[in-house]
Amino acid sequence: MMKKLLITLSVLACFMSCKEAPKTNSLDANDKIDIEVDSTKIDVVEAPVKKTTQQIKEELTSKGFQVFDYVDEKTQDTILMQQYFIAFLKRGPIRTQNEEEAALIQEGHLAHLSKMYELGYADISGPFGDDGDIRGITIYNVPTLKMADSLAKSDPAVKAGRIEIEIHPWYAAKGFPLR
Image (cartoon, rainbow, N blue to C red; front, side, top):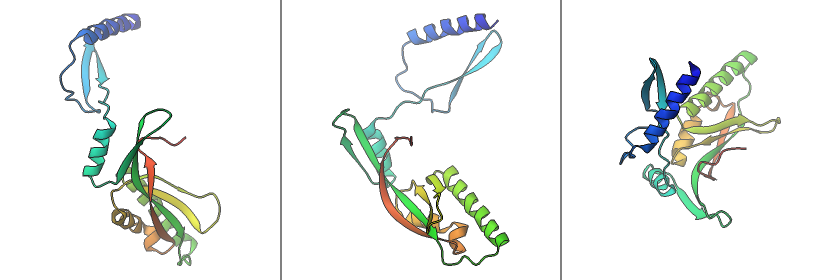
């Protein structure tokens, strides 16, 4: 049964690759095409159309982001740099809460950071591994310092005074992952 399914899919792939390509891609990255083979329904996800650097640059600029690009001398690739905002979460002046209050504030702080990530406003957050005055960072993926500052100051730990925020504009290459 599995061999028959694989053969059918191979023939179908060959047939589909010989068809004339559509003039435009009307599917989004999350759109699916349903194919039925031997009464087995298969979801085929279309690969998203890759945007050019210029298209990404125009899209970001239209949303208010600061960007610039340069050509890498070695690879000759155009590297697109985007401005983010890095928030340093520093030890705040009010740290007199009892253990139970501090735990509730920390719970709210973590929920806030999770929400920022889920909404796409923050790309990465985390604590530092020492016990210094700078407790951690959050990198905000928003177009303005005012927006990053507002989001950071809505953190329950900031509101309670356990953490203070210091924000700086920071550029990073768009689309380059952490390693």
